[in-house]
Image (cartoon, one colour):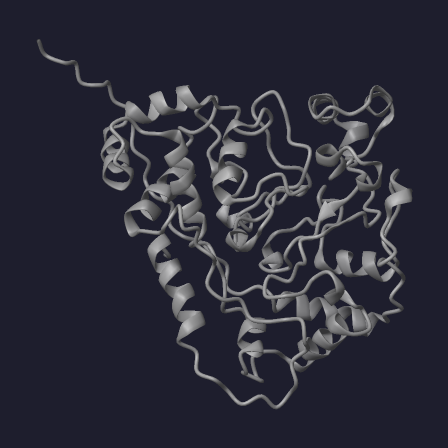
Length: 376
C-alpha cells in the first residue's frame, strides 16, 4: 500500500530520474509530461505536515455532523471522486455537481467547476464549510480537534499551535493532496521518449487528439487543460426533474448565489460560471478539466451526464449537445467526422492518460478525549 510519503517520493523520482530516450516518433507540440507539483512558499511540505493532512483528509472531525470527511466525496476506490453523476451532500441535502478527482489537483490554478477557489488550501476550507458539503463551523471544528490529544500534539509540532487552528488544518490537508499526483502514465513515458509506452492504436489516437479531433485546443499543456471556461451544450442533470432533494438543493444554490428572480423561477440548468460573474455571456460555462486519471473518474462532465470515455468522445464527435444556454455555446464545438475506428483510437489514447490506480491504506484516525482539568 502507498503512503503519502511514498507517493510524493515516487512522483519526484518518476520525473527527475528518468533518462532521456531516443524518439523515433515526433511528439505533438502543446503537450508535455507532468513534472513535480508547484509548492506555495507559505505552505512548505514536510513529512509531518503531510502525515497530519492525510489523517485529517480521512477524519470526519472537520465537518458539521462529524460524518463527512474529505474522503466521503473523494473516495480513493472511486477515482478519488464519486462514481455518481452528482456528489454526496450533507445529510438532508445532495450536491448539485459532479465530484472532481483529487489526483493531480495540485497543478490547478483554479479549483471547483467554476474556479471558485484559487488554491487547495482555500478549496479545503470551502468544502469543509460548504452548506451542502461539510457544513462545518470553524470554532466547532477547532474545539473538536482540541479534544484529540494526538492532534493537539501534531498541530503544536507542525505549526506551533497551542490550540489547533482550523486554518492550519486546511494547510495540512492541502499539503497531503499535493502528494496525490501521477506523473508516470504511459502518455508521460511516451512524451519523455519511450516509443514503446503507447500502443500503435494509442499513437493513432494521439494524432487524432492533436489533429483531426482538435482536443488539444482546450486540453493542452502538461495537465491537459487550458483552465478556460466553455459551454459545451452538456444536457441538464436529469435529477432536476425527478429527484425532490436535488430540486430543493438546486433552488437553494440559485437563491444563495444571488441570481435574478426571473432566473430563480425559470432556470432548470446549472448556470456555471455565471454564479460567480453574473455576466449573461458566462451562463452554462465550466472550467476545462484535466484528462488525467479519467479512467477511474466516471461519469463525466460537471453533472455526470456522460457515463464512459466513449460517451465523451461521441458527444464531441456529434458537435456537443443542447442545454438552455444555447446563446453561449462555444463555436469550438463542431462535428468531428470521426469514424468508429477513429473513435476507438481516441478512446484508447485517453486511457493512456491514467496509470495504475492510486489506492493507499487509509490511516487510523484518533479518537476524542476529555481535555485535562487544570489543578489548583
